[in-house]
Amino acid sequence: QKKEQEKKEIVRTTSDEVTATDVKVNVSIPEAAERAAKTNADGVGLLRIEHMVLNLNKHPQFYIRNNKEEELINELFEGVRKVADEFYPKPVWVRTLDAPTDEFRSLEGGDHEPHENNPMLGFRGIRRSLSNSRTFKLQIRAIEKLSEKGYDNIGLMLPLIQDPNEVRKAREIIDETGLDMKEIDFGVMIETPAAAILIDKIIDEGIDFVSFGTNDLTQYTLAVDRNNENVSSLYQEKHPAVLELMENVIKKCNERGVETSICGQAGSYPDVVEKLIKYGISSISSNIDAVHEIKKTVAKTEKRIILESVRQK
Ligand code: PEP
Ligand code: MG
Image 1 (cartoon, rainbow, N blue to C red):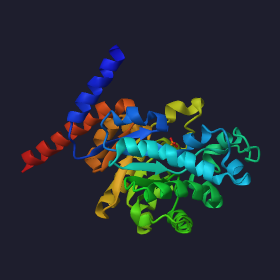
Image 2: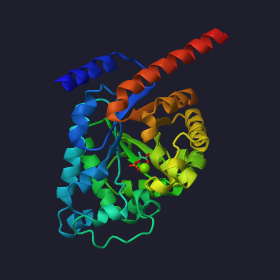
Image 3: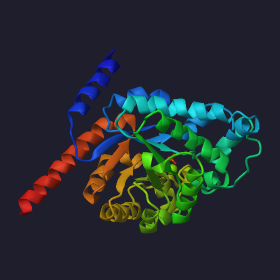
Image 4: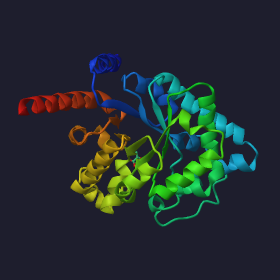
């Protein structure tokens, strides 16, 4: 009962805060959508599709081989719809499949998955979608169905982008489906230093937003495996190199009218969020349990920035 009371308290106070910088929430499974929406977050900054797929225990190839593609499309459609309903008309950014090969291998029909020495540097994210466009298109088809049903709050986000070529190729594949890109928000995750460095050219490809995947951006910037406990003390999401990459990207994006956000774990840390607000980020997406505190941090930081600028005049 105490927990229920605490939950209600969170709902009441968070809904009171109004901030210029949106505070969104990460949703990993559709079943969490209701709890996530109760935080009164300004939308979903990351909806991970892979959990919807992994929870089915069948490899996407299983559906393709057995002519059951519609079944998988419907599962994804229903999963995303549940979240989109909870948040409508607030935006929900859906990230396409991003699981490493070892996770795909454990699924029925996943025996063919390659054994990799370093799956996190391997066949995952957008690279997988580009070389296996049929699975990619199933996901796009689910989003297209939502769009057809009138959901105009859906965004599509590509993981592990390295350079503008990958964005272009992904768009070409999407164009082969019936999805009208004008109907949805289109963005990429910035989680490789390469993407951060090439941000200008990536913007040239026509994106509406970027979102920092700091879990990966940290591991690739610092060359520290995020799952290796031997080097866990070196895994620093607040490292100046990671922060500087984000600052530069935000600056470029603001110059060119592209929305910026963060959906990695660092978006749930008040001290990082404070810095990102000062850099000019458009929104923060944090864990369900962190939304309340992050809203307060955002409100406090914005007020301080306003006061500082007024006093300087
Ligand atoms: C990230 O890398 O920060 C991220 C949000 O994606 P994931 O943790 O799923 O790799
Ligand atoms: Mg990632």
